[in-house]
Image 1 (cartoon, rainbow, N blue to C red):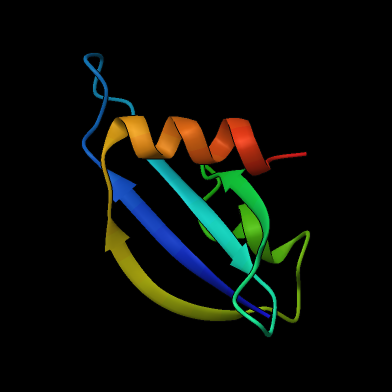
Image 2 (cartoon, rainbow, N blue to C red; image 1 turned 180 degrees about the vertical axis):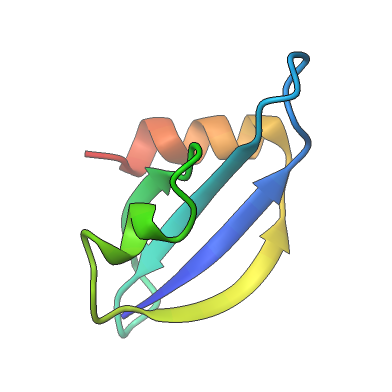
Length: 72
């Protein structure tokens, strides 16, 4: 299992808009976790054995859609 760090621009108030996308060994999306201000702990607490993948730039709309569709 790996996780990708998806980053987009901050919101109008300067708050970060980042998320972690957790993938299974076949590349399927398992979970989408909002980073908030927790950093990598947001994903490693729930998935302690997941390996870190690359950081990827994304748009606010893609981030919103992923969180809506895949978060539990």
